[in-house]
Image 1 (cartoon, rainbow, N blue to C red):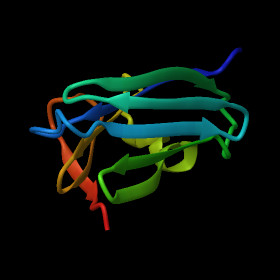
Image 2: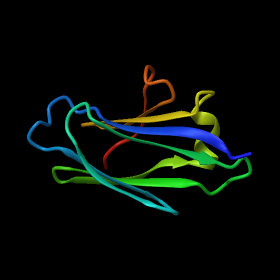
Image 3: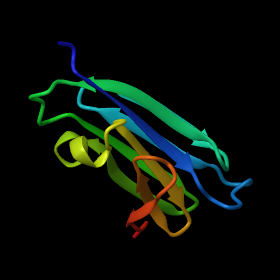
Length: 115
């Protein structure tokens, strides 16, 4: 048994940031996935496998846009094992007013603000 596969995706949902990209940097306790500059509509995604008994898998991202900066847990196995749904899809839409979560990319719920 090799684990349960999850897909994590962070999308730039800004309506007009053509001059200032959304900068994202993500890592886990095992690897640094590096940084990206996302233009409007761009995304940064990755897949991984978590063992069934795993309680510690964590992916952490820092976002920067203009003078705003926010760090958050893009995936935390204890929180997201059920929340990511039967397809194990964990998506984030980053907008001017905050960070939205979805497990189907159709129904978005605001999780938290930039501040």
